[in-house]
Structures are given as structure tokens and as C-alpha cells.
Image 1 (cartoon, rainbow, N blue to C red):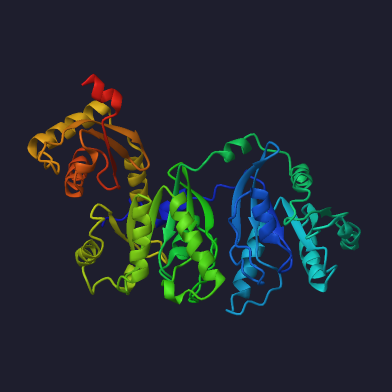
Image 2: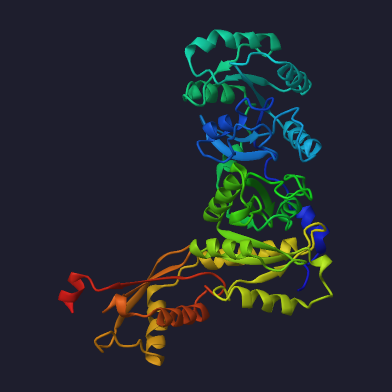
Length: 466
């Protein structure tokens, strides 16, 4: 496979995180004060994992939002001072520090029911050094009787706290108003930052196949924690990046385990979020480890992609560990034999740790997105279908009568969805539908993406007109 013209260094010079003109609002606090719950509450989506166990959040989560006419990135972080049992405390802290380094506003969350703790004082000392506005938020005030207790936190020196309860949906409007009032004056380009990315790419695969390393290569930053520890990534992490003048969103997903190996709520959350990320995505990158055979989890993920009719790129990662032992063509054939229902999916080979072929993978994803977004005129579709029927008529129905196909039209894109009007919808066999899809794949732009073919019978009006 030819490398990207100009090499990896040229690509790095053209890629940047799209956040320079967008203010960053960073949510911090000690473990278990409800930062992730507050993050989800503000963005009105369940993105961050909410769990009573401390230390669940590891990577920093970023969501671009528009509130009160302002656009900003809301960033959730791990609990400060948490001693991670997997030895990732330093990396979690580096993620917190990276988020704070670009903060325009810090939302410092405390927990009113337990009062002021030593851990809160340590967080206060750390954020005080930043020389940026700090908004104190007293969470878990589920009843007004806690409001007086919240003023114990006045001693931190950040002014009276905004008293809220995520659980009881108390004072969200006050919190939003307090955040937007403290943001710096907007840049003229800020509103443009609210525009949706042109393409969302979900990176999925089983544990330790290099998904987070790939995302970091795209972002040119340690946006996701990487380690040999299986299950390091727990949330789905959105990372905006730009290349060739286009803004994209990469979604790093948790690595999945076999169903019988899922033992905790975190495994359930990880599976659910990976599946939701596939549904959100325009294109899926299904990662494989070049040094490992395809496993059951890989097949389950492929089934999820197929169920969602998503364009997919098979990415064989860690190719530097395997190159030379088996030719690429053999790996391609291995994937073709394993995933026989997806012969149209392109295969790419990459080494995320060095950035090799990362740009080529994204270029392929863009190509699939363009194909899936295409529309074919009805006249052209009907010409293709008529020629296919003339060459190979559909088999007769159960009564021996000929099945007629009247016309075809594309009703949707992403995925391309084509409706056939027929004389007997139930009599059009699955093998014949596959035949028509094969013809469409060869003669339309949809060469490497799934095609939905819907078949319906004549309406009453159409029968009367005939």
C-alpha cells in the first residue's frame, strides 16, 4: 500500500485539534462528588459513566455544547487524588492536567452532604494556581435543608457555591447561567465551532488492539490513556481533529470482552457505549491485532456494524510486529473468509504507535463516507434494475406467477436505501435480492458500503391505475 504523499511528518503539520477559539470549561473535584453525573446533566446526554465506585472516569471526556448563545467545550475529568488500582494514577492525573492547561473556566464540584474534606482543600490548592476563573458548585443538595450547609465551602475562597442537585434536577438553569457569565469574550469565529463535524468515525475492537493509540496519533496528543492493562478505556471518548481542511470526530471506544467474561457493571457500560458509538458513527473502523487471530468478539462487533448498515474499514493494526511473516494478501483473504457477508469492506494496514498509514485509514473512511452519502437519480436506478431483470428475471412466486418489478427509487442515504415496488413483495427471494444488490454495487457509487434494499408490493391506488 503506498504511503501518504509527503510522509507522516507532512500529515502532522496539517492536523490540529479544533479547539483554539472555543473556550474550555473543565469539571474537576475529588472522587465521588458527582462530576460525571453533572457533566451528563449539563450536556443532556448520557456520555460519561455514572457509577458509585470511585475512579471510574480515567480519560477526559469532551463535548462541544451551545448554551445561552455561547459555544464551549465541556470537559469531564477523573477524580483528583484517586489511587488507581491498575497503576494508572499518573496517567489519569496527566489527563486532568492537560484539560486544566487549556481551561478558560474551572467548574470545581464539591459534595454538600459530606461537608468540606481535606481532599477538597487539595483540589482547591491546585486550581488556585491556574489564574483562571473558578466556579464552585455544591452538588447533591437533594433537599433545601442542605443549602445552609453548602456555605461551609465559602472558606475555599471562590465565593458562594452554586447549589445544585443532579438527581433532583435542581438549579440547572442557574448553573448554566453562571458558567456562561464567566466565559471570556467570544471570538468572531466561535459560533462556527458549533457546526457538526463532517464525519464521525467510531474506532472499535476488542481489548488492547491499539484503538486509543490510533486516536492519539490522529490528535497529535495524549488524548486517551494507553497502557498494557486490558480495559484501560472505559468511556467512549470523542476527539475532534482536522485534516485537509475538514473537521472530523473520532470516537474511541472501550475494548470489548466475550459475553461470558463480562463480570462487572463497567463491562456492561463498556459494551453499551461501544454499541452506541457504532450507531452514532458515519463510518466504523473495526480494529484487529495483526499478531492475533480473529476472535468471537471481533465477529460480534462485525454483526453490530452489519445490523446498523454502517460503512466499515477493517484495520489490521500493529503491522510492524507481523509484517514479513505473512503477506498482506493472505491477511486480506483471511478476513474475507471470516467475514463472508462483508466482501465489500476495504482492508487497511497500520502501525498506530509510529503513525504509519494512519492518514491512509482516514482517507479510506472519507471515501466510504462519500459513497454512503451519494444519491443516484431514479431514472438511473430504474435503468440498472431493468437491465438486471432482463438478464436474470426473478423466480416465480409460490403459485408459479411471474414477479414483476415496477420501479426503484433511493429514499435515503447514509446508508443508501433503495425501495423496489413489485407485484409480490414476499415472493422476491433473498438470493435474488442479493443478486440485485450485487448489480447495484457494481453500477452505482456504493461499491464499498452496505446497501439497504426494501421491497414493497403495490398500493391499492397503484393497482387501480394499472
